[in-house]
Length: 628
Image (cartoon, rainbow, N blue to C red):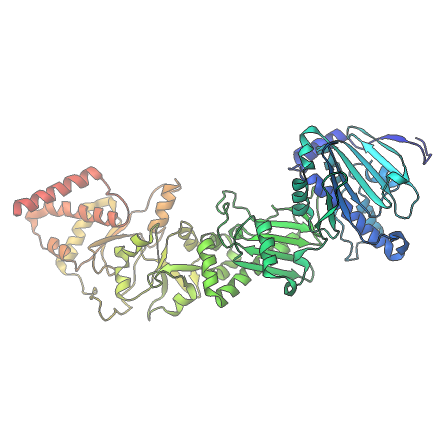
């Protein structure tokens, strides 16, 4: 191997390049678009390296102190060029950084200057990103001139086993820095389109700390596409609302106004910036089956991934980004290593989002109500997924209730308005509010002015089983167990349902229980019914009626619990049936089953046996006609 620095030299890569490129196409990178991000990141790193070196050697900057990155397109020749005026490379630098796969000049630089300085904000720490260029190019040429050097060098390779390093004429090289020329494959020529290049540069690298220009075709004027500043690092007092809105629309892919903006910088053991938004309307992918978040992750203002799991799934409607200066990266910038630092960011971000929502709920109730209209059903998923924050989420939760009209009701307001003697937060779950409001199970609660939460989202039946109390008050379904209403006085204009059942009625209840057999677990006199004759309730232990339906529909219930049939002992129909004698035994048997089917229909179910129900109804009609 020659040591003449003026000679052209061909070397073999110090790695199995074909295996590496296959790994990048199929494993490391999921999208070819990342090649531009990687080249821009390397260019930005080179400019940062020069800034460090210039602290002790200011002459390196010469008459060109302002860092820059230029992207040029040449569709006719199927070329894309990325050029910077950073530190540049010598011949040895090229051999080490570009000739040895996964040899990172950036990592070596960090090791040399030390890791204790907070200004070491460099991305390319693994030396693999450059080779993503071979996903779109069949040849790559790199021309570079080290700052302060009178020599320039050209590195060239087709990425298939070897590379060539040769001297480059100074007049054909940058005055300082590096020029990377991609000779595109036929299926990658579309990348020369100015709109596509600009969109990729802005979305993936528009916030690196170096300005970026675009030259759309040979001979065209360069135009600025990124100014080297990031909106999220600017003071909030300097940002106009329309700037937030424009940024939100770009990062969220929405065309509405943000309902809330969350912008802060966390300092201390971990430093990161956050700019996040609650959309003004539901994103189209809100109910995707994967239920992933949509927060983008940047590391030192370079886009890493939009799949970093930065928020819990119940906050997946939040759009925005986190920019960290501390997160460790792995070989691909699309994936980050799980670390205590990432867990700390996730915790801090989640708490801040929930905290800001709580402030909004307290200070701007109408604005928060609009957010709850759109995303309440998603937020409630956290009530059974996030035990640590359940109390916080319960305070944020809003509900329709028998006292809320068309508005929303918070649990704190519910508890403050509880009746004397009321020990629980009562709720009723179902899939239709109008049907719930007409349910016979609510009659005793309405008679006492007791507010009942009306839960109509499927998720409601799950979280109430996981959130047993709020401020010391248990949640209790009105369709389950004993209502325990006798300690709460009736409203002045309500009928008195508390008169004891007569012995005849007690006898009739026993008869109904015997007639229904295993269809029910018990038949009881009800204190929750004031107008209706019957209703069904679930046993005290086990799922309530709605949760049982959901589990049964999902095939997750081996055997349904037998319900309790509650009968209003003061209802005129019940009193009439209780007064019948032995000669009407068959009619009473039919009546017992019809009362049960009536309760099922009122509960949203079908009669237990459609044919038997039809026959009993026919006999009832015939009896009425005969007596008429």
